Length: 492
Image (cartoon, one colour):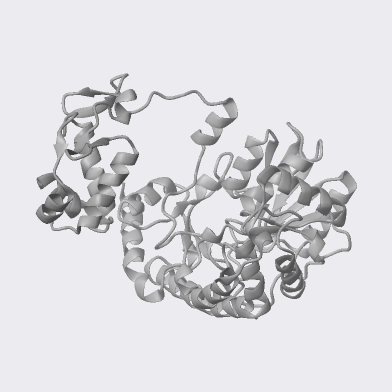
């Protein structure tokens, strides 16, 4: 009884039948309910714990199905003589431990690539709140309109929408995307050039597999998105970091040896610093790629959100037949959990990529894609972007006002281009941005240290601050906490 009360107090939101199942299972494992002991009738236990009888019966049935209990007709329910966990577990006192005697399983060796990936992993477990960078305000997503479309499609879905997909994704979605990208991003494409992927990482993985061989050279931005580097490295490509400045990617003399097979850039809003690639650099990069048979991968991750001036046209649409693979995502415009992105491929690559995507990843989610296609066609997608652009602009203005009031205008990174879902707070080079971010996280404020975006030796110290998923009204308190962390680090 006391164990049950403690469990409910610790996690009152857990469904009662799952909580009771877990409580009984743990009692069996730690010996509190020894083998062959009889459990009380479901009606009696329900009365004692003030639960419905169905709740108790569901817990009993789950334990029976998993082999923890057995029944004897006319006699009742008993703890099994040998429960499943005893095959792998032994007991030391009241606690269950592995046979090795350790609290955790002994480490199992990974491949060299696997060890490197796990060692350098940078994905955060915190993906919401002040000031998580790169995350949109998912609470503003027009879910009612989206679910209305989805519910209608689910009433009588065609069988082909419930099976595997092929051909690069749902055609109507690719058709609507082609129209949107031509109008909003000046991308030259038709539906057959588009492949729908499960996020940008999958798109990059497919590009690396189909266009790169082991040890091929690949250029990435420095600083740049760590996720791209991880995907390229795990595919055996030789990643070479190229610095960026206020005009974007800036190759130096040391980079002009063997040309890269792939060049990854974020020209419309460099991630993470925010600069926009100049027309001069864009044309030079296109010419370089054409001359050396390199492929440019244009990651246009958040270009929909520009808050002053005209939108920056895509690199892909700048010249005819550009050697560019354009990559976009719905993670920033709608919500990350949708896990939906897309590639716009040169016509000579599209069929091969479509076939390989189906071969490697077994496409699906066609009902979601069909819903999204109607969502775009009805004008809801463009309207949502327009609305969120106003909201994000207001939040960005509020965050800059806090920075200027509490720290001064010189703390905003000089490459900032009034766009995107985050900005970069420049720190004095002697200030440790990793320690500041760690101290802030301990107080529930999530910023990311700029130094972690460098593959080599960092040349700047700073903090990435996302303003999209925190309202102006909720911004002050976490910002004051961050200022306290900065002052404490400065005084150290």
